Length: 190
Image (cartoon, rainbow, N blue to C red; front, side, top):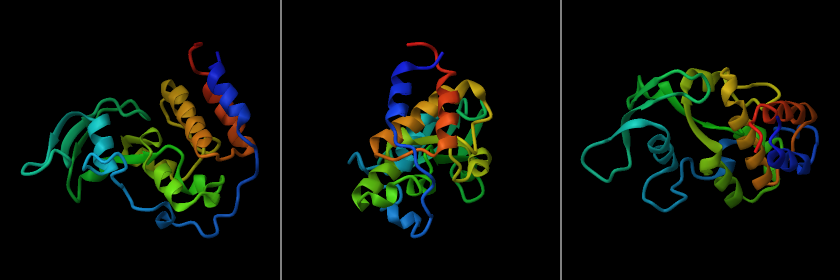
């Protein structure tokens, strides 16, 4: 059954076509992994600390830099993924922008000021620690072009997409609206 509250939010989102990608760059979204909550740790490490289990911090300093942990389970595949910081190992767990920055740009973020775009890029509700290869497969896809392989996570994925798009006054494309409706239909009745 569809989650009524999220369905109402989705219904309120404007439907438009994809805007051109012209002018898009990661830098348009401000500082990468800013410390938006002022706790002295960047958002990447905050999300790793939030989403991993058995977190070990890098020794010799503030408890900010996550050195290792376990993603159990990965929200997109259901797999258990070990995280160990290092040039050859960090990519096993990546931080996904649930609404990718490119998709956000093509859905209205180009009209936001830089501060709002930086908030969107570092918003904990838009960030998830996920299996790296699966995140790479997603690329900058929206809900119409990519879905998590694990269907049991579709409700959460769709809910996050709608929440972020509503929060930053972004729009949805027609096929994306249909896909989000399908995702919300997997939610338990509330």
